Amino acid sequence: GTPWPTLQQLINAGQRILIFSDRKTGYRGASHDGNTISDTKMPADYVQTATVSWWHYVWDYMVETHYHYEDLNVMANDCAFNRGTLPLASLSQEAPIGGQAYRLTILNHFISDPLPNRRMAKLANSFESLAPRMEKCKANWSHQTNFVTVDFWSLG
Image (cartoon, rainbow, N blue to C red; front, top):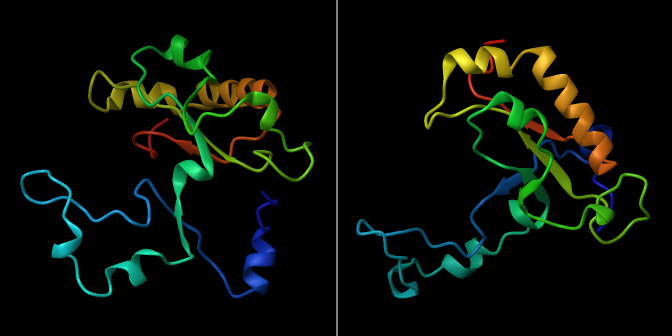
């Protein structure tokens, strides 16, 4: 891999957006009964439109922490990766170009019981909860968090 472009490099190149999806470019969708739609039911130009260069399968580029926490203390002490897993030794902003050095990181930081919880979001979204976890994971990974996901972003 190569380093991600800076925002200024994207602006200079006339590119302002990066597209990531948890669906691969060849994803055909699902029918009403949940089965994958067969190629015969797809439009004639499906293959051509499904292989665009700007569509990025998220787990080829990112790793994330666990998606479900029920306890603030458990969440505060967890920096383990859940999806897009790779060896921590491969994830470092100081590492030479290549391998996994430039993988992007997602820090999931919310409490579910089992649904989003407004009362807990106010606590989880606070600086006192979020900042120490970001610092802990940064030290653990030798890599800055790129994306933080929270529930009820306006609370906390």
